[in-house]
Image (cartoon, rainbow, N blue to C red; front, side, top):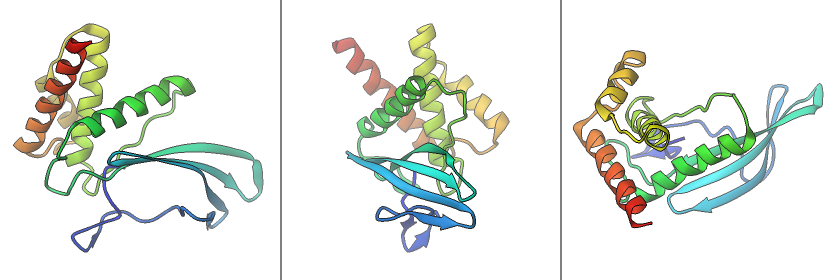
Length: 170
């Protein structure tokens, strides 16, 4: 989740969890198990259960990036890159084939940047190459407005430069 619940007095997302107690939606219960605060983002773990089959519950990992304003860019790319890395590491650790769901208020701006960065960084680690143009082009075939602005494109490039600089220092 790449948005706060509310920005500029406008609702961006529905609060479908509680940090204090479990919440019930029809026959589904969502209970917070764990919450970890990082710089500019939160990692929550929820237990999701059906009232009729509570033993068949499962764990949902929920990341929420808070340092990215609507129609803007994060002040620093580092927390965003750390969150992307944590999501990818968790995905590998859990050995899951389930899809990762990414959302912002519009579903294309911050979401597009997050997905593009994830793809480019993964491809770089496997193939040693970066093709940002082709990545964004492919994303836009699947969802037309992905990575909406030049500022968003610039943020991807700056994030990649930061990542490259970090890895060349190791």
